[in-house]
Length: 254
Image (cartoon, rainbow, N blue to C red; front, side, top):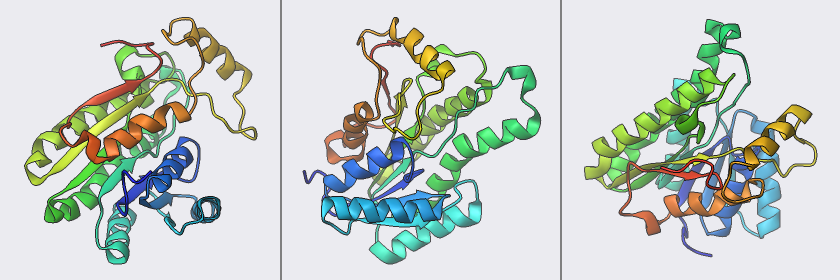
């Protein structure tokens, strides 16, 4: 408790999936968390639930389309006006459709790159001038372990996340002199802990197959990513930048 007391943290895609776990952990560490999501109603509902659960007022909803230059610029301006700072950005928003490569048309390719890569560019571009003026800041980009191994039927997603890793390293080089750290977190195949959103039979078969190649012989859950994410957001990682931390139970090793 308290590693991020009063830090202002933006989490994109914060109202759903693993983003909810990130926001919960950040609030529990004392951060003021801006729950950004294209689902503005969902963001408001989750922020309200989180505040009630933690007995605080540290979760703040904000409806944002992270593929929009105007809305991401507005996100940064709104957070700065309300809190006076942007300390951490967690670029978590994304999607991972399974489509055979020859069935991916150009529009589908662009949609996946827009949500998984363009969003990181736009949100980072929106907050970096604020962080540079502050002389401090941290950005955590969510990638995937699939950039190390590849996987059939996810070419557009893996291409986008590979771009995220390249952008992470480029921004780390460019903004380090301004006191800004940029790192990435690469999860493995996460089994959701949501009873209303169970894995499909095909999804369950896929994660069961992956399990046999992991060093840690159990499925990965959202909670397995929280500690690494908090580390990258907190001063504990203040001498780390341009790095990709893979959390996948030892499926990939490098």
